[in-house]
Length: 388
Ligand code: NIG
Ligand code: FE
Image (cartoon, rainbow, N blue to C red; front, top):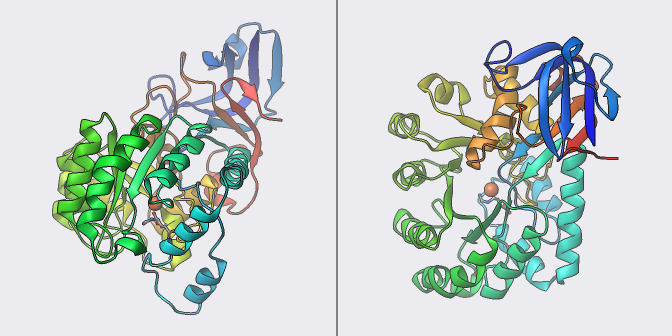
């Protein structure tokens, strides 16, 4: 069964070989899909015949958004903490332990329902791929079940046993790191593709982070790091040292950090929802881009620092607050996210790629930043299936 999307006013392919600019834009385009993959992309007048079709009515079509950083497995919310911040309290990450208590107390079904609700919410806003972390369990059993549940929703699951040191280990951080590196990793790894650490003052220092990431890597997991979110630190350089797929947050960077990123394969994943929701200064994307670093955008969806599942919102913030052009932000939210997950099958619309796409209720990708807060995603296709 083949499917043709036609009458596309502006098709963002992210393949500069077939269209204009870095987004590889093709105008008056069509795209055909078979077996969940993109089969053909080009000018509408050359389109092949298909069993079924959809008229895009001159609107823009983009690759589905790739949200490469989300913490969806949790219970409860922290709206009161948000209100306190908006009244002047700083964000320290201290509330993570509240979510850990709520998560431990929840049943599997409660956690699963929460993930399903947020996954659905993201999909309706155009997110066709999402990474999901553990990190609110922090016991062997709770981290393992968090990942088992996350696996029901995505192949890109991340073991974040090193989110914070849980209350019961406050005076024994070394013992907690041993637990994470040993029994917790052994139990969690079968359900994880990635290992992550919150490398930050108040969470895990460089030595602990390196120890955890290195054993994770030896267990076959790819590396990602929560780095330089709340202040300067060793996270970004550690990420580069270990050839991490991504260093996430990158809010407080030195020239040395930027140079290290620019000379590496590690993507800088920026999470402007976190700065928005913690009323903090945004990372300087311009500085990273001008240095030649690959930049991704993601939501960081979590109940504490960034409770949004909206990639269009992050694109708008990146353009308005982080000096990214609309084209750079759209690329970062699609192809950039794919790079941050080291995936070549998503984030672009070329023959053979996953048929994951978004049809906007707008003539151009520019509208994602130009019309902030407006629900512009009209249709979403995931693996060749139109989401009802
Ligand atoms: O990415 N930085 C650490 N973890 C999350 C916040 C988690 C929370 O506050 O619950 C983040 O921002
Ligand atoms: Fe995060």
